[in-house]
Image (cartoon, rainbow, N blue to C red):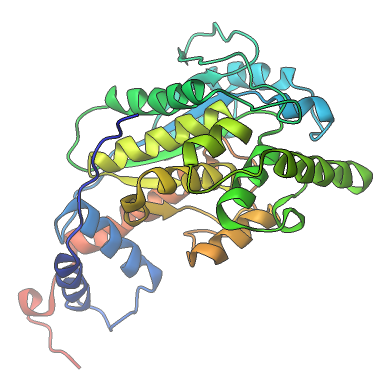
Length: 344
């Protein structure tokens, strides 16, 4: 599989952006993390005064063979029902995209049932993954095709020199797949990676944890082979999100990672494209316990902490106005010299 080449961001230019931030008419650091977010976006955009960026969110749908082991509070048919709801504008991500001037697209990457609904892009690679307790969830060829689906979706977006791309998902049992990927790429114990997902507790949560342990023991996924990990335990929407992240970064765009599910896809994408990390903005600290541990593992501070655990791209959508504000500060604030303001 041939992936696009990512731009190499210049560390010297990042230092220049930092000097510009410090020269704005405010006490040093007075805008807190808005300054560091703006500096990261300016570094990606290649200018100390980044434009007001267009924002796009891609929500990918997929189903999972692991769902047959009762790891979710909801039946698998909810995936296709929610794909219809999202495309029809009735989901949380739909409302947030409307509220925040975000272009939204919904894509069937691997839903078990057909999604012939207006507004759903058709890129189905397989009708749900296979049971990972019986064998690999996907073939390597299918895993590659999922990544390519994400790349192809980004290729359809306007060729802006700089923009924001958020990725989200819909798929019953995908918090189990996220836990598998997180354990594979970070070495985390499943006890830390497995959470309630759709809200399971007690013996159901214990069963979910045991299933995750069994799958990891069966496949022993090798993080040095990210495509193999994705094929063994992953899902279609994870591959598509990873491909979309890489495709957007290759354009020189900032990529907004949503929550736990998208974060697991980001681990896949970073393993496939090591330069990707600089382009990623982590939107929020999900209420899923594993998500918090992933952020700690990577040393990342998210934009928001609102106890979200919905997915769909909702955290990414909520981060967009803050990121646009960070760009506006760098673009529109005067410097001490240009405003004739004396320094302390």
